[in-house]
Amino acid sequence: MLGAIAIVPSAPVLVPELAGAAAAEVADLTAAVLAAAALLPPRWVAVGTGQADDVFEPESSGTFAGFGADVRVGLSPRAAAPGDLPVCALLAGWVRAQARPDAGVQVRVYRRDHDAETALARGRGLRAELDRAPEPIGVLVVADGANTLTPSAPGGHHPGDADAQATLDDALADGDVAALAGLPPRILGRVAFQVLAGLTGPGPRSAKELYRGAPYGVGYFAGFWQL
Image 1 (cartoon, rainbow, N blue to C red):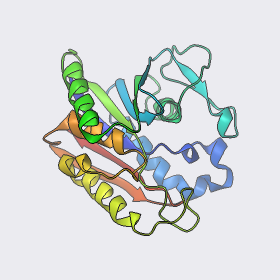
Image 2 (image 1 turned 45 degrees about the vertical axis):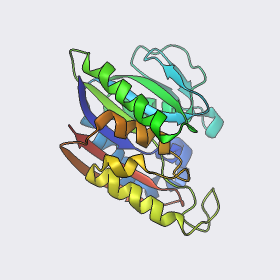
Image 3 (image 1 turned 30 degrees about the horizontal axis):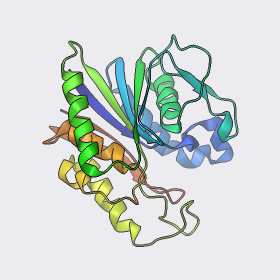
Image 4 (image 1 turned 120 degrees about the horizontal axis):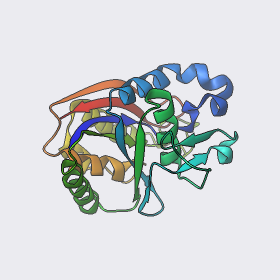
């Protein structure tokens, strides 16, 4: 059955070896991410976006070497030798090891250009699959907002995107799945958030915001939904 849901950003800066001196600047974000993930049961499914639909099983592992440091992560305690994992899976593995090292996580990657109806349908299909399981399964949503929120943002500065980011943050804080279903393409993790909407429709029983901000011009949110 579907258990609780944690929402965290797809942000390699969470990893201290990658953040360097900036680790102190994101300490509040890191604490919020780990607090949200620690509330999940021992079996997880992570939801993120990538270039193609894919599934990575708990035996998989990878490294952040492509981001500047050979920090190795596994999707479970029994993970094998490192392979090639997308960033959402790497973050899921890192968060798992820090928050619930006994947990195992299967990562579902959804193509980032799916339209809203496809993403919602994938979420509904995942819900049906999880509800057939006898034990509770937690969901970890690993996704970012807009990357255009400040002059130094990696996607350039588009002040108008602040409204879309506020809509996203408010929807995640309030459990508003209808607002998630209508997110615009400039939200990097749009598809993952729309899978979340399909997964949890008509909405969670409660939603809790632990962090919202854009420390590097990218919208980051951490929170927890209870069904």
